[in-house]
Length: 545
Image (cartoon, rainbow, N blue to C red; front, side):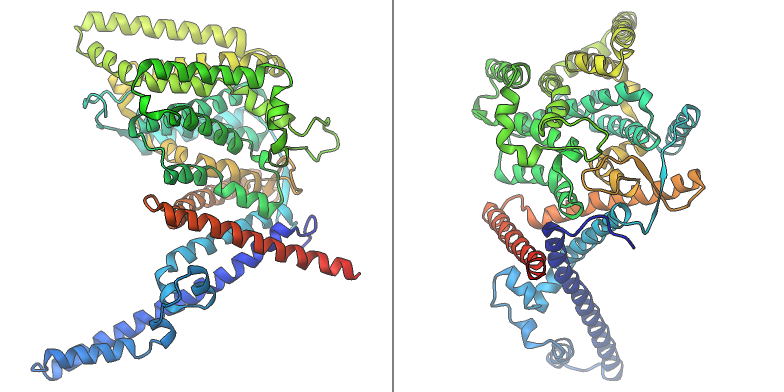
């Protein structure tokens, strides 16, 4: 097995951290098995005693149970005087291991999946193949998935609006998750098959994701008014936990996974916009002022030459990126960040606006549904006609442009097709109530499928490399290989989604800021110690040579 590139301190520190946790998890499983075995034997003994002597006293029965259940427990299991979880972990405190067995299992599984990432993308143990695009096959697979989804997962929802209490369901959660799902499938197939002819559509899909970042976060903070440290930490964990470990284990730059810093930035901007003077958010003029301020900040950062690079230069170590491909032109380190974030610099604000007027539009739609039939049909026909006309004009005069030219217009025009889609998807009550739950399920794991595709579905082979190759498990059988690698890839993505949430619950408590801060400090200290040890382990042999 050939490993591409030497081990880094980050990779060694990951191994130093995961190996003891894995050992502790195995020991906790053994303790759980032993406890269950003793408990089963104890219950069996009690049943035999009851059959032999039904007049046994309750005190005697309690003594028998206590003697059978606790006799095997060591003094270390009874003693939990050591309060530090880290110390108790390394002392293999049995009660601590049993209490945290599920968390230890989740960490171990998470580590194993990251090792699988490394195995697929950084070694030659598994094969690789070239990408190949065929429009007929591409469309066949996508429409086949739509048909299967429609046949197997078509669902009618009867949820009530949180604003009016009626079944309006305008832009409901089922609908937005489905929207993310079908876009994500095309986004992934675009990468797998190198379908460059739909480049402009992919740019639009990414804009729609960013629009939903503005829409979803504004709706949450405006309604819930929850600007707590716990909520902020949970939000950052969801966006960056997996990508952080991918950067460490695979020695990649943060910007290789550009969707993550983009969504982090725009989420922070929504959080800041509503969090500042949040007690005045009920005043319309204040919200209007905040929206205008957001536009002014974007104009200053992205439209005024030189300001973007000056502002972000202190974070070049985090947001800098250079493609290792020698055939690619070399740009400044922050060019990729400027390009990616700049394409969707306005659309998150449009999402905020749509979220703010969401209750108002729901009330209008409620009144529209109560109108007499002819008038309702006339208004809906007008809305559909205007939407289709706008969509057609955008498609003819913007979408069809070459990609370089299209990118120049994209930041200012991406709101048009998004608005058209929202209008057409919601113009009748029946359309609003329907969803394809298969796509909605895929929509929930878009972050994991985006990150995982680079390493267990596609393949780059080098740090920071773009995934130009396919992972090949069945050589010379491209469709069978597609079926197998896709199945594994989706399963891995779903497990990572579940594990991220499990570990978030364990380490980011929602109502205990003191414990949250302790966990944060402990994480920084442990990471620093492991990295220092790893650096020494790598450098000392080099110095002795």
